[in-house]
Image 1: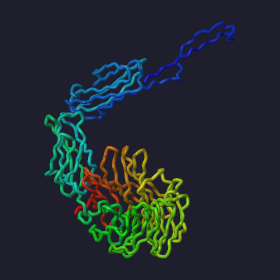
Image 2: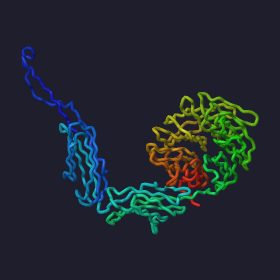
Image 3: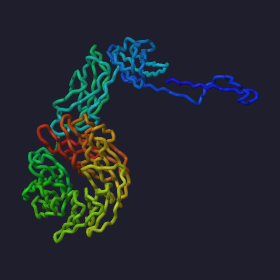
Image 4: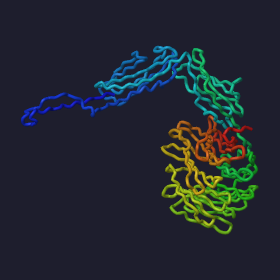
Length: 579
């Protein structure tokens, strides 16, 4: 960058001080006008190797240089290695350069190599860039592990074959990568997998926790120091019986007094499965009483161990129905609610009636044994989720107004509104699915998926009992372009912490999805995030239950052969629990 100095001419008047008597100008001193400077900025960047890299002494390394904004008319690029000229080359436009070199030709082993590039254009305009690297000893380089992340849990049918990856040796040629896996952190008798590439696929692992690392051997037989040590777990699913696997997809988990109700896909229609806390099947109901298959949208436990089920038929008219199932899975009643409507959420009240909220109609309906009441919702409000407290005498509704924006509204059994909150969240638009969870202190946590520029992340909001936002947090800020995050469930820990279950695809280049579990404090501070998945298939987390000494996570695996329902347990810190 060169400073161009401008000059001005100072005229000195004669002693009489009049222009008429001067008859001309006397040329005075030529002085720079310091207040006026101009800068011509041209860019020149060494893009490889990276600063601080350790290069193999005899390797063949690419030196790459890019530039822009150099004017037509010619420029000269000079490249030095430790102040010794290597390249001098003329370009008509902005220089672009790529050529291999051997580090040992320019510096001794174990020393620093300074690579400097200078470009000079017309008028003496110059730009420079400098990179310092280290020429290693014959193999002075520690490999870095890249996948999976430390603590990752491999799930379901292919946990015995997991993919492990490290980074490539910079500038290397002919190296061999040896991956070591051992259940003991001291690696007394590791299983070994070797490859000429920086990744392997293991085989024969059993369910359990493992430690892994990698060493690299050069083409001359020298060995690198071992990488850092990471852990992963291979976890067998808990519910593998043929009866349980008749559910190909688990869409939602509803926690009852003595077990779980799972809502999901039975193939040709949706159904309900009742399980105990070990996920042993007690009964399955396929809701075959209707002419058309049932598409279940929500469920809520009923007194006595039964379940209230809401959904609609798959016919053109799309009638909405409510079902009452008793503790043995028998249908005790059914009620057609409305034609061509979609029940988004349903909750039972203490007196046996039911709140129904609709995602495509601006009204809230109360259904009981004698009559159906309906309250229109102003501003074209559409319901997303409903929740009731332990007394079940009112409900809280999460909804979106037609004009934009989100609301929380508490509604009594008679339809009166106790309070209404316009939620000033820091994002413009949520996407399905939505989750609303009642908290022990009377507040609520709700969440959804936020999408912007073809990339989505999670979002969770925590309110007090009156619907006032206490904190809001984004999940997955490190997701790169084209990545996705889908909300599965939100639950509260007994100490007030909040668990958020989701499914993540880290980027557009990663075709596989993994389950992600995140824990926040009651004040919104992130405690940890854990990932669970497999090497080759996609896993989706759809339901979460908080038990006394563990968490139950449910979902499904989108396997190459067929979908597989997933159930597994972790402790309250997200560590896997094995059989």
